[in-house]
Amino acid sequence: MDSRRIAQMLLVVAASSLLGACSNFPSRQPPIWVFPDMKRQDKYKPQMHSDFFADGRTSRRPVAGTLSQEMYRADETLATGVAGDNTYVAKNPLPLTKETLLHGQVKFNTYCAPCHDRTGSGRGIVPSKATWVPGNIHDERIVGMVDGEIYHVISNGRRSMPGYRFQVSEKDRWAIVAYVRALQRSWRGSMADVPADSQAKVR
Ligand code: HEC
Image 1 (cartoon, rainbow, N blue to C red):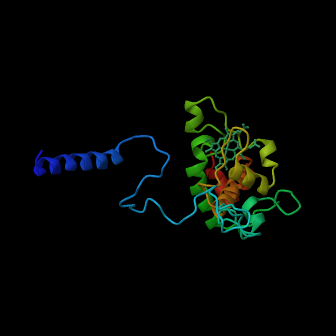
Image 2: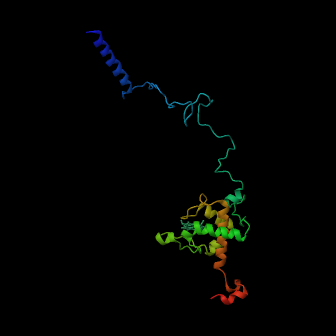
Image 3: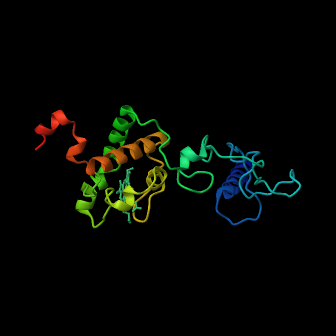
Protein backbone atom coordinates (compact mmCIF):
# COMPACT_ATOMS: atom_id res chain seq x y z
CA MET A 1 0.00 0.00 0.00
CA ASP A 2 1.60 3.27 -1.02
CA SER A 3 1.68 6.28 1.23
CA ARG A 4 -0.93 8.14 -0.86
CA ARG A 5 -3.47 5.40 -0.30
CA ILE A 6 -2.72 5.36 3.46
CA ALA A 7 -3.26 9.15 3.60
CA GLN A 8 -6.59 8.75 1.78
CA MET A 9 -7.77 6.10 4.26
CA LEU A 10 -6.75 8.22 7.24
CA LEU A 11 -8.74 11.10 5.77
CA VAL A 12 -11.84 8.91 5.45
CA VAL A 13 -11.50 7.68 9.05
CA ALA A 14 -11.01 11.23 10.36
CA ALA A 15 -13.96 12.56 8.33
CA SER A 16 -16.33 9.79 9.42
CA SER A 17 -15.42 10.17 13.10
CA LEU A 18 -16.05 13.91 12.83
CA LEU A 19 -19.41 13.32 11.18
CA GLY A 20 -20.18 10.82 13.91
CA ALA A 21 -20.18 13.72 16.35
CA CYS A 22 -23.16 15.14 14.47
CA SER A 23 -25.16 11.94 14.56
CA ASN A 24 -27.92 11.13 16.98
CA PHE A 25 -26.06 8.47 18.99
CA PRO A 26 -27.41 8.63 22.52
CA SER A 27 -24.74 9.82 24.90
CA ARG A 28 -24.65 10.89 28.52
CA GLN A 29 -21.94 13.40 27.79
CA PRO A 30 -22.94 17.00 27.21
CA PRO A 31 -22.57 17.95 23.54
CA ILE A 32 -19.38 19.66 22.45
CA TRP A 33 -20.25 23.22 21.44
CA VAL A 34 -17.77 24.42 18.84
CA PHE A 35 -19.69 27.67 18.31
CA PRO A 36 -21.99 28.12 21.35
CA ASP A 37 -23.90 30.98 19.67
CA MET A 38 -25.18 32.19 23.05
CA LYS A 39 -26.97 28.89 23.63
CA ARG A 40 -25.34 28.73 27.06
CA GLN A 41 -25.64 31.91 29.08
CA ASP A 42 -24.73 32.84 32.61
CA LYS A 43 -28.30 33.45 33.69
CA TYR A 44 -30.88 31.78 35.87
CA LYS A 45 -34.05 30.26 34.55
CA PRO A 46 -37.09 29.65 36.77
CA GLN A 47 -36.79 26.66 39.13
CA MET A 48 -33.03 26.25 38.53
CA HIS A 49 -30.53 25.55 41.28
CA SER A 50 -28.13 28.20 42.48
CA ASP A 51 -25.17 27.97 44.84
CA PHE A 52 -25.22 31.72 45.21
CA PHE A 53 -28.28 31.84 47.48
CA ALA A 54 -28.28 30.06 50.83
CA ASP A 55 -31.54 28.19 50.11
CA GLY A 56 -30.25 27.06 46.70
CA ARG A 57 -33.19 28.52 44.78
CA THR A 58 -32.92 30.83 41.78
CA SER A 59 -36.59 31.85 42.06
CA ARG A 60 -36.58 34.62 44.66
CA ARG A 61 -39.49 36.12 46.55
CA PRO A 62 -40.14 39.80 45.76
CA VAL A 63 -39.02 42.23 48.45
CA ALA A 64 -41.69 42.55 51.17
CA GLY A 65 -44.30 45.15 50.23
CA THR A 66 -43.61 44.91 46.48
CA LEU A 67 -46.68 45.77 44.39
CA SER A 68 -47.02 45.09 40.67
CA GLN A 69 -48.00 48.06 38.51
CA GLU A 70 -51.36 46.42 37.70
CA MET A 71 -52.10 46.10 41.41
CA TYR A 72 -51.18 49.67 42.28
CA ARG A 73 -54.11 51.96 42.94
CA ALA A 74 -53.59 55.56 43.88
CA ASP A 75 -57.08 55.67 45.41
CA GLU A 76 -58.53 52.28 46.37
CA THR A 77 -62.07 53.59 46.88
CA LEU A 78 -62.13 55.39 43.54
CA ALA A 79 -60.71 52.31 41.80
CA THR A 80 -63.06 49.70 43.29
CA GLY A 81 -66.23 51.60 44.22
CA VAL A 82 -65.94 49.93 47.63
CA ALA A 83 -65.06 52.01 50.69
CA GLY A 84 -62.75 50.99 53.52
CA ASP A 85 -65.60 49.63 55.65
CA ASN A 86 -66.51 47.20 52.83
CA THR A 87 -69.64 49.04 51.72
CA TYR A 88 -70.32 50.42 48.23
CA VAL A 89 -69.44 54.07 47.75
CA ALA A 90 -72.71 55.99 48.03
CA LYS A 91 -72.00 58.87 45.66
CA ASN A 92 -70.16 59.22 42.37
CA PRO A 93 -66.81 60.95 43.08
CA LEU A 94 -66.85 62.74 39.70
CA PRO A 95 -68.35 66.22 39.52
CA LEU A 96 -71.82 65.87 37.98
CA THR A 97 -71.27 68.32 35.15
CA LYS A 98 -72.61 68.37 31.60
CA GLU A 99 -69.14 67.23 30.40
CA THR A 100 -69.23 64.20 32.71
CA LEU A 101 -72.68 63.20 31.45
CA LEU A 102 -71.79 63.69 27.78
CA HIS A 103 -68.61 61.69 28.29
CA GLY A 104 -70.59 58.96 30.08
CA GLN A 105 -73.08 58.91 27.22
CA VAL A 106 -70.33 58.27 24.65
CA LYS A 107 -68.86 55.48 26.75
CA PHE A 108 -72.26 53.94 27.58
CA ASN A 109 -73.22 53.90 23.90
CA THR A 110 -69.90 52.22 23.08
CA TYR A 111 -69.56 49.67 25.87
CA CYS A 112 -73.03 49.05 27.28
CA ALA A 113 -75.52 49.74 24.48
CA PRO A 114 -74.60 46.62 22.43
CA CYS A 115 -76.31 44.59 25.16
CA HIS A 116 -78.37 47.06 27.18
CA ASP A 117 -79.39 49.26 24.19
CA ARG A 118 -79.05 53.04 24.28
CA THR A 119 -81.97 53.50 26.67
CA GLY A 120 -80.71 50.82 29.06
CA SER A 121 -83.84 48.67 28.81
CA GLY A 122 -81.77 45.65 27.81
CA ARG A 123 -82.84 45.09 24.18
CA GLY A 124 -79.49 45.67 22.48
CA ILE A 125 -78.17 44.00 19.35
CA VAL A 126 -76.38 41.21 21.26
CA PRO A 127 -79.49 39.84 23.03
CA SER A 128 -81.40 40.09 19.73
CA LYS A 129 -78.99 37.49 18.31
CA ALA A 130 -78.43 35.35 21.39
CA THR A 131 -80.46 33.93 24.23
CA TRP A 132 -78.91 36.27 26.74
CA VAL A 133 -80.99 38.60 28.85
CA PRO A 134 -79.23 41.75 30.12
CA GLY A 135 -80.74 43.41 33.15
CA ASN A 136 -83.11 46.31 32.61
CA ILE A 137 -81.31 49.19 34.34
CA HIS A 138 -84.69 50.79 35.03
CA ASP A 139 -85.73 47.97 37.38
CA GLU A 140 -86.52 49.27 40.86
CA ARG A 141 -83.79 47.04 42.29
CA ILE A 142 -81.11 48.57 40.06
CA VAL A 143 -82.43 52.13 40.45
CA GLY A 144 -82.20 51.55 44.21
CA MET A 145 -78.49 50.62 44.03
CA VAL A 146 -75.94 53.16 45.25
CA ASP A 147 -73.46 54.53 42.68
CA GLY A 148 -70.63 52.32 43.93
CA GLU A 149 -72.60 49.13 43.29
CA ILE A 150 -73.26 50.06 39.65
CA TYR A 151 -69.57 50.94 39.31
CA HIS A 152 -68.74 47.54 40.80
CA VAL A 153 -71.01 45.75 38.31
CA ILE A 154 -69.36 47.59 35.39
CA SER A 155 -65.89 46.77 36.75
CA ASN A 156 -66.31 43.12 37.69
CA GLY A 157 -69.48 42.02 35.96
CA ARG A 158 -72.27 40.13 37.70
CA ARG A 159 -73.63 36.64 37.02
CA SER A 160 -73.77 36.41 33.19
CA MET A 161 -72.50 39.96 32.60
CA PRO A 162 -68.74 40.25 31.96
CA GLY A 163 -66.65 42.93 33.72
CA TYR A 164 -65.25 45.88 31.81
CA ARG A 165 -62.43 47.10 34.07
CA PHE A 166 -59.76 46.23 31.49
CA GLN A 167 -61.51 47.97 28.59
CA VAL A 168 -62.91 51.03 30.37
CA SER A 169 -60.80 53.33 32.57
CA GLU A 170 -61.82 54.22 36.13
CA LYS A 171 -62.85 57.74 35.17
CA ASP A 172 -64.89 56.49 32.21
CA ARG A 173 -66.64 53.92 34.41
CA TRP A 174 -67.68 56.60 36.89
CA ALA A 175 -68.86 58.78 33.99
CA ILE A 176 -70.97 55.82 32.78
CA VAL A 177 -72.47 55.53 36.28
CA ALA A 178 -73.46 59.20 36.08
CA TYR A 179 -75.06 58.62 32.69
CA VAL A 180 -76.89 55.49 33.91
CA ARG A 181 -78.38 57.72 36.62
CA ALA A 182 -79.45 60.23 33.97
CA LEU A 183 -81.10 57.45 31.93
CA GLN A 184 -82.91 56.16 35.01
CA ARG A 185 -84.08 59.66 35.87
CA SER A 186 -85.33 60.32 32.33
CA TRP A 187 -87.23 56.98 32.35
CA ARG A 188 -89.15 58.23 35.39
CA GLY A 189 -89.69 61.70 33.98
CA SER A 190 -93.17 63.22 33.97
CA MET A 191 -94.74 66.28 32.42
CA ALA A 192 -93.85 68.19 35.57
CA ASP A 193 -90.15 67.85 34.63
CA VAL A 194 -90.67 69.69 31.34
CA PRO A 195 -90.22 73.48 31.60
CA ALA A 196 -93.63 75.18 31.54
CA ASP A 197 -92.98 77.06 28.29
CA SER A 198 -92.07 73.79 26.49
CA GLN A 199 -94.90 71.64 27.78
CA ALA A 200 -97.20 72.60 24.92
CA LYS A 201 -94.66 71.22 22.43
CA VAL A 202 -94.59 67.77 24.06
CA ARG A 203 -96.86 65.28 22.34
C1 HEC B 1 -72.04 41.54 26.68
C2 HEC B 1 -73.30 42.10 27.08
C3 HEC B 1 -73.27 43.17 28.16
C4 HEC B 1 -72.58 44.33 28.17
C5 HEC B 1 -71.67 44.88 27.08
C6 HEC B 1 -72.93 45.02 29.37
N1 HEC B 1 -73.81 44.27 30.09
FE1 HEC B 1 -74.68 44.79 31.84
N2 HEC B 1 -75.63 43.03 31.93
C7 HEC B 1 -75.55 42.05 30.95
C8 HEC B 1 -76.33 40.90 31.36
C9 HEC B 1 -76.50 39.61 30.57
C10 HEC B 1 -76.87 41.23 32.63
C11 HEC B 1 -77.75 40.36 33.51
C12 HEC B 1 -76.85 39.59 34.42
C13 HEC B 1 -77.59 38.51 35.14
O1 HEC B 1 -78.51 38.85 35.93
O2 HEC B 1 -77.25 37.34 34.94
C14 HEC B 1 -76.42 42.57 32.95
C15 HEC B 1 -76.73 43.25 34.12
C16 HEC B 1 -76.36 44.56 34.39
C17 HEC B 1 -76.75 45.29 35.57
C18 HEC B 1 -77.63 44.76 36.69
C19 HEC B 1 -76.83 43.92 37.64
C20 HEC B 1 -77.74 43.22 38.65
O3 HEC B 1 -77.43 43.29 39.86
O4 HEC B 1 -78.72 42.60 38.24
C21 HEC B 1 -76.23 46.55 35.45
C22 HEC B 1 -76.35 47.69 36.45
C23 HEC B 1 -75.48 46.57 34.20
N3 HEC B 1 -75.59 45.35 33.59
C24 HEC B 1 -74.82 47.69 33.73
C25 HEC B 1 -74.00 47.66 32.61
C26 HEC B 1 -73.23 48.78 32.17
C27 HEC B 1 -73.24 50.16 32.80
C28 HEC B 1 -72.53 48.38 31.07
C29 HEC B 1 -71.52 49.16 30.26
C30 HEC B 1 -70.26 49.38 30.91
C31 HEC B 1 -72.90 47.00 30.79
N4 HEC B 1 -73.80 46.59 31.76
C32 HEC B 1 -72.43 46.25 29.73
C33 HEC B 1 -74.86 42.10 29.76
C34 HEC B 1 -74.02 43.12 29.38
